Length: 77
Image (tube, rainbow, N blue to C red):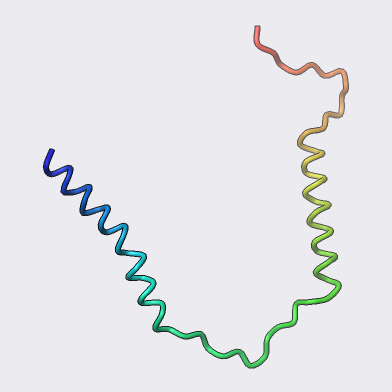
């Protein structure tokens, strides 16, 4: 019983300290400056968003729709 308690306490301590140590290590590194950034703005983004929305809507309609209105769904006896 004591071994299980000590193991649990050790794991809990490791889970608490690991993110704090990782955050301190990441603080020392700075990002490199960007000389020329890509410009991803414009009409293409709107077209892609509309096509993605249309694909999602079409997928929902295909997944929920049935071609045969007389089709009987399975039921429990």
